[in-house]
Length: 215
Length: 215
Image (cartoon, rainbow over all chains, first blue to last red; front, side):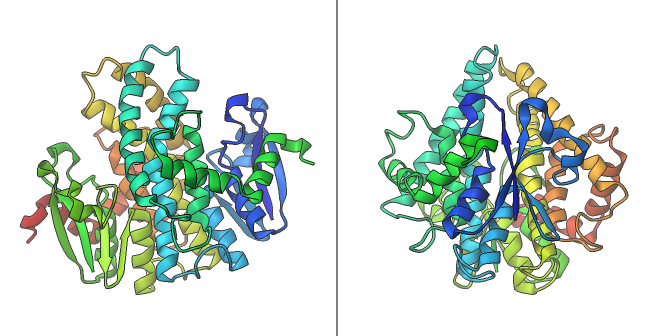
């Protein structure tokens, strides 16, 4: 299985790019994979060749035999199904609960966290940034208030083992990462750190940071 | 099966709210369902009772026997699987291609279309709106340029029949709907109108607009 990942981007996004999600999933399973690295500072993700893999010119993408996929949520679902672990059996009630939380991570929790991250770190000098950040932070608070209650003392979002719902949510929550981001949210802080302390995440993070120099 | 939908919102969002997605899917299949309506002008989507169904206080949500789900992507996947039609068989290569396009609709194509819609129609007087719209419109163009090429003369995103990928993408593309939105994109225009002309979409749209007065 080949996973397309990005390197060469700004320092601040290292370890935050979505190609970490399938790699984290594969590391949890202990499944073999090979990473193909695209140098974003040279626009390698926007070549015609790569656009035959992912027409949007984004990472991650995956090639496994005759299956080519993009979108991290779809790739993580494929990986979980291929190895028959790490997610409830396909089609079960719990399977759809995992899907629901994977979608919620990406569709509902991520947008305001991502926008806040982008407008803080890449558009800080933009004349609109202060006004935009007021609206995005309000949305972040609304989403995190819900997640704090939902998590309670749960270790994982569905059942008693890590699933792709946690991979997606754990990756999304890193977009809000700064020393004080989750100070007011002890459950989110605990949940996040439990995930990020896992050896599989640490390995994926190391791979993500090292890029083509991966040991 | 019960689908939670919203009514009582501003005129301009009628027919655009995400509860139209599962209803459209159910109408395509001809499956029975009952809609439970929440009056958003009275905040009925934010009551403690509804938050036990969807903690984020958003629509749609679904209750089917002992299965409760939120997030339109997960609900549509559940519906397709329950009725064993309208999507490739679960776990197949095509199944994941459909998932990929459903995610792409929601994760990649929707954000700039949605932001443009919101900042145009609800934050037009906001001091930041012009500057924000410059960045969102740029992203919209990038996404639509890709979709125009991907669609070519395809009728559907995967295979020769409508799938939940088209439900998700067809619904997302409506967020950009204004008389000139797709003038420069003949393939998107054709694809969209083919979907929106389907009797099942028309029925879902009618239901969505009528709210609790549904005939």
